[in-house]
Length: 265
Ligand code: NAD
Image (cartoon, rainbow, N blue to C red; front, side):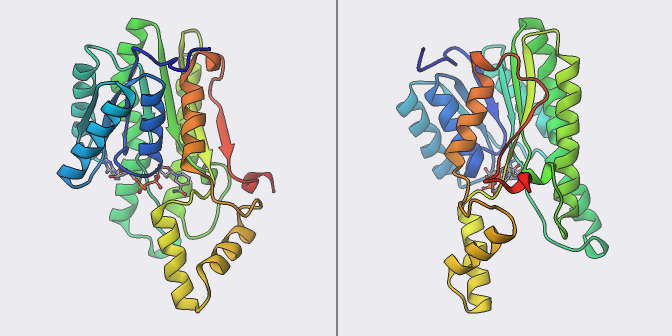
């Protein structure tokens, strides 16, 4: 089997200057896809990232700084991606997203609107703008990065749980509308990924409660993630790359979990 099954493809990954999105971009590049990065960061650091991906994987990489909460900027991003891909965007990964913690009655109204814009409307607009080109060329892969909280709920995360559930619904609709074609649309549903932000939040909690970060991690995991382990972002990336590859052509409308058993309870 080719180790670069995505050779010649062009992939747009939203929110890919850090975290899970960066791991996904790295894996798709490793498998041969030209890349369009998106997300915030310091200019010099993003340029280093871009150049390093090009050098390591021998693919063409560009960055576009669209704020995906704005639909006009999503359209600009997709246009720039088509230009980079010499007319094609074969793979779209809607990854940008975030969570806010607050009880429903005090969840900020603007925070709600912004979370809906980033977590749900941005994938809709990005899909709406890339799908016609995919249909024209008769091939495409769309992967939406949802969450285990797209399948089960927890308190104090109304915006996140609602938008991630809706993102899975959106995934299924697009999958059905493209079912007779070589375009697929799926979602991945990670549990708690051990990125810097999650570890920092556990460190902060540990300071506040005078425990060790390991103790806080054990308590959080005991409540949520039965394996007790963080999900490696590289594992999420490998799952996304599989969904973009030749052997996933009949995976349609799925919401695949990697959640250490969270949703099995
Ligand atoms: P992160 O905060 O580490 O990285 C987010 C990336 O998105 C960065 O590149 C940032 O610059 C970019 N970004 C943020 N807002 C943006 C905007 N408005 N427009 C464009 N880019 C923007 O995030 P992460 O933890 O890697 O999460 C990535 C995705 O995975 C999200 O959709 C999140 O909901 C989902 N997820 C995360 C976890 C977890 O434990 N971290 C678990 C399940 C699902």
